[in-house]
Length: 258
Image 1 (cartoon, rainbow, N blue to C red):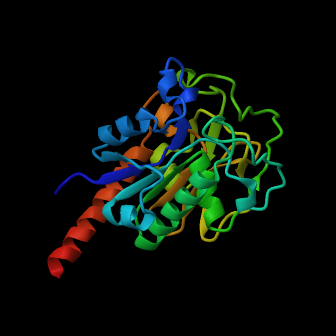
Image 2: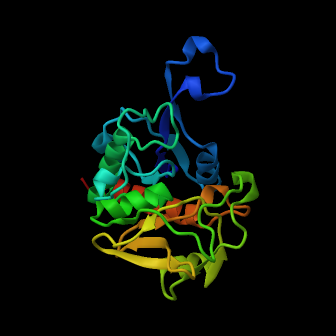
């Protein structure tokens, strides 16, 4: 059986934002995908597929065996009823912190299509939050930092905040993958608030911030940290590839039956 295809979302940037890029191309756009996702998918036995915005969501999902919705800028507050003011004149292709309505729309369409097709989904950081929003949930607009630092000032190479521990619910999938707790990285200032339809909380920090969610009885998981940048391999990639292999096998069996 072939290896499962795992779609990975990214963002679109102007080459004018890339240091040392030729000025001749500064007004051209490039699709950007963190290679750590592809490396982890490959190591777990899958084939990574980077997804550009222009691809038809339903058509793409029909060809995929699994989906990763990655991190990045905030989801636009208009998608979930947030109160933050966003300057519509700021172009997300020139400002990496600006919300990107086009990205929001495309990734939301991917999630909807994947849910309808029962394609396994892993939402990471922003993707974890967008999954909750697509299912009707809301976000904490800004976390007030206290005993736990959620928006770590550290670089990705430093593995985030080394004092950030997530505690997992006994009997949950996350508890099966990680045990009772795991130290994770952390680069976020928003978080899941009201849960979307069918979602359950699998892990939280001691200050109550939701760090892991799952859609009941489905191969759909969201994590608030960045598993692609953990110092040691994160088992969520093995889980995703295993689920995607099962999805691929199911397609093959149904195809053979017809």
